[in-house]
Picture (tube, rainbow, N blue to C red):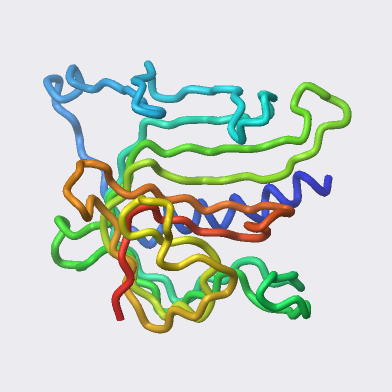
Length: 232
């Protein structure tokens, strides 16, 4: 019950964040020619996978044990949305920079705008190669395994997210060189815009991930951008 409750706490706001009903859409009839051209293909680590979705058990953390369940979805989204407030992970947390535990939000964003312009669809926030990853201590132990972390993300995102980032827990790297410009718990980025995409022209778009971990340096709700900049 506890594991299921933790899962629901995480996945519900993520689903609302990524597929908010505030988005503008309508149904339209597809022609026969359009329907005949519909196909699905997923990618993972640059390897093409067949079908709309794939499910993999793998060794994600490199410890020699296949304890990670990974679901990959061939979904492409373009989004513009406005959200008044997003708050995740209010708890008493140990931070190596502040060993005195204090209560606070992992993520506290206000006046959020996802996408660059309501009037210009070309500035929508784009995402593809979505995945859902769950890590267990011992996935083969059906009666005693426990969930250690869960993550939702996309291997390819492009666009702007603007907000008052009162608290941001996560990592933002502007060049995917593993030397992030922002990395830590409960950072106050202020009123800023996170711009994600292929910033250095090498063809590698930014990765995005929102995770919930029960322990470790990324404990709590953690957001990652592999290739993004932050501007006031």
